[in-house]
Image 1 (tube, helix red, strand yellow):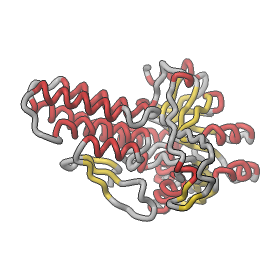
Image 2 (spheres, rainbow, N blue to C red):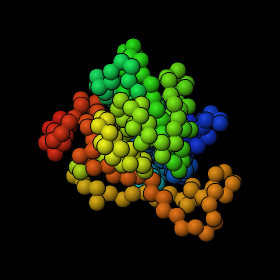
Image 3 (cartoon, helix red, strand yellow):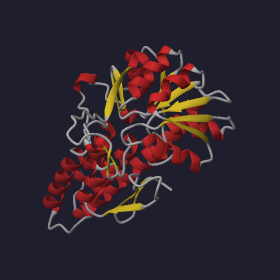
Image 4 (cartoon, rainbow, N blue to C red):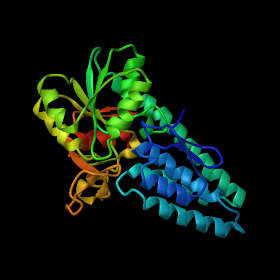
Length: 339
């Protein structure tokens, strides 16, 4: 099934409960959806693009309106609320803006609703299609018998379906290639251990879990053939992904291991540099607690950024639905993606 879809509301897999429980969450109001995005019930850049678009449709349907002015104002307010939830992943804003533009072109309440939902559904369908194209291109880089390291979760759960980094793995497996995956746990929210390992086991793909601090030794022991990660935003000098990605990229460079980034065109924010991007900071409780158990002194100072920028000179290639992009990125990204 899909990670997120529409059924008289925004329906999603609640990713905060995996792997202990698989539960479906239904959001009937924009405020419920905004809270779901904030607490990472839905996460991953492509999935957030769909969530943002579905949120605009949800705003149009969540209550009765007296006239066209009222519904359009309500949708604009909803767009601002949704945009405030996660500052780093650019896809969220793309989804919001596309659905908002479609909705605002409507000439009646019913047309506003219809156009918003149509655009949201279009975005969801596009995500599945582009991820499968991206996966096919990326599979060309994977040799039979390869072991791939991945970081965080860039699979089905991070998208509407199929995945980006894990989409490459799935495509390689579907071509009959024997592939193994080493998944870093990805602190502090353990999206590698909780989500990536769960996904791959569900698909019957060989996966081994390691702690983040073991990435160096498994590379040193020649246990990794390449690294593939996803992205939340790609600017002209860096890739923003889950905190710790930069460390893995530096290790890969040192050991001569290809470091690939898999991301759709919508993730590129090519007019910005890394210094212009706001990096979201998460709650201190994510580091000092495990459930209700205290792991560190209650009064310790905590720095908990959710993402880090990996300079593009550490990236061997970027895998997109338009093909594989290599250096020089300053020339090839705009040319291939028509940015």
